[in-house]
Image (tube, rainbow, N blue to C red; front, side, top):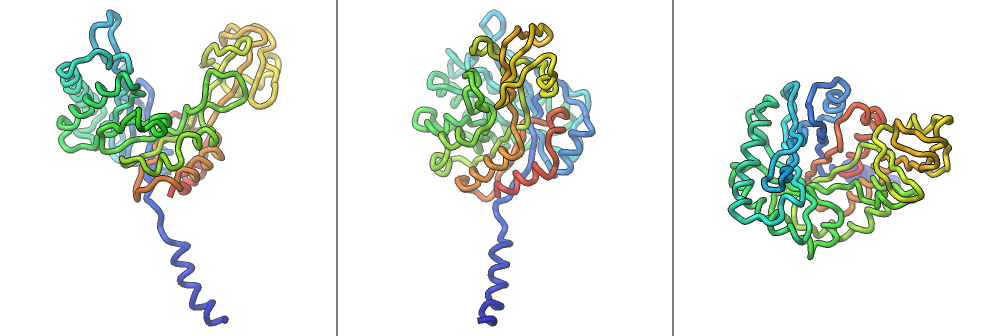
Amino acid sequence: MRRAIFLLLPILLMVSCKPGRKVNNAFYYWKTVYRQNATENAFLQKLQSRRLYVRIMDVDMDDAGLNRVPVSPVSFENKLPDTIAIVPVVFIVNNALRGMSQIQLTDLARKIVHFVDGKVSQAGKSSYPELQMDCDWTAETRDNYFYLLTQLKPLLQHKTLSATLRLHQVKNLHNSGVPPVNRVMLMCYNMGNLRKYGDQNSIIELSELKKYLGDNLSSYPVKMDVGLPLFSWAVAFRDKVYIGIAKRINFGNLNAQDKFQSQGNNLYAAKTDLPEYGLKKNDVVRWESAPAADLCSAAGYLSHYIRQDTLNLIWFHLDEPVLKNYTYDELEKTGYLLR
């Protein structure tokens, strides 16, 4: 018996050390000015990130409602580090896709690539490996969006074309369709009802993730990357009706006892009018965040359903105030659980 156990040990060790899928860490950069930052660069280095997904611009209608124009394009105060490849990301507002002819969509594809090429050059890069398109398309805009994607492909000269994918577009595959791209990036955040009063977390909640994915994820016909959130916000309500994101509030503000009264479950009531935050007395703020434990739970769940050997884990987003809420080890553990 002892000899049998001894012979079995090498086999058990080989099984326990069997490598899983390869997970590459990357980050989104969603600010309108790129500048070097020591904390942000440290996270890139520690997590061995080799790509930065940089929002280049939004595409929306001009004020007259006649032309599609770039909105809030990024500018580069510094060049990207030599070790980091840029992946340009272009967000297209649904309204900009309505009523377009195929000729107009072909022209828009050319303009997007031309604009992107210019911004990539400003970032100090001669090329880029991938272009990612971001659009929450609907049944009304799907055909135009998908046609635009087909027009982008030949302009990219064998680069990867990817598209973001919302949870509802996975679950409702029959109605949403499959975008004609090389890869999709599954957005595992902003998954709950932000406007609903209560103590839920609309940024990330495992129970919501399970409603949309499971076997729907396993059968998705395009190679998939995963996006996880690194951000928080304060959701404000007046008489239990959503009034917006209170952008000037951080978690420390909510713990100021002269201003807010904790109601438990991440809900805080204003004790008095707070014009600096756009709040009135008795308005309620729900603090939402993406705790490391929730990120790990999501990663562990997703790992059972993703059927591929390699994926990119893209954190949203690279921003020093946000990153200070996490350790390198916490983010590394999340990536490990996706293997």
